[in-house]
Image (cartoon, rainbow, N blue to C red; front, side, top):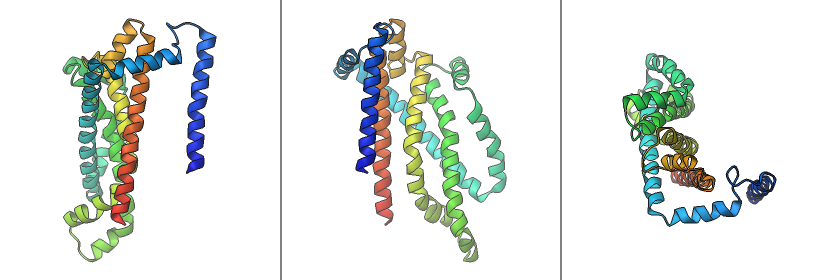
Length: 247
């Protein structure tokens, strides 16, 4: 564990050194800002009410999209575990959603909805296939081990769902949920940039790019990445707690 942590810290240092070298080589603040200018800009954002309003709006939009995707994916995966015809029916839909060009979907949604709604909808469309696939994999592993025993003793589908599949799948789903949630944040911010969503991190990034404020653009990007790390860390702690609770 300590060795892995040391290598992770070494990776961060390597990125920092590469940044310093790139800045010295390029020598153009309008293309590549200095590390310290970005740190100062991050400090400005931390004391800005505009940033926190945008941050909370983006985080709330991401959370709502993630919860909707999670509920939809788990419920449909659970039903697909019991009904083979439903699994066959959903499979092409999931494949289509996986291959849809995200930017094209955003542009279409902007015609149908508005910049406040489009990022949330496109995030659900991107996250749902990932949640569904993770749920199916978790349920298949549980079913392969206990399904024949449940059928032998005549355990009902409802009892199997709520007393076997869902409780036993929690650690596996939490393992995947961190990466899925952080991906949701990335998709939401990207959609906000393209949609120029008002009071959002993506909207602030679009504004910074329009005014060639590269330091602000880098600062907002780094803060988004750090938020993604925080989300994954929270999900990791929840997984550890869930495993301890099962034991």
